[in-house]
Length: 79
Image (cartoon, rainbow, N blue to C red; front, side, top):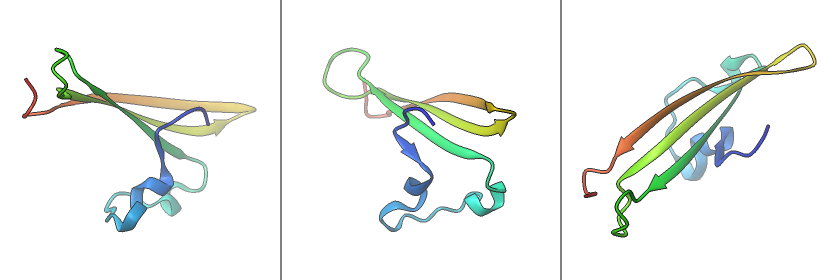
């Protein structure tokens, strides 16, 4: 599946409430992963944003197909 920071088990890790689509509804074919990178854009020791990539993959023939969605979330306490 490649390297990912987070996967299916993290959705409900440590008792977290997950209200999204459960893996049982994915039909056993789709896999979800995500990576989070924290960025300090000005070097002041405070992360100014989080870059997030969500990967969904599914089997196709002898290989896999995937879609990658990317976004960023600003830290309002960053400067």
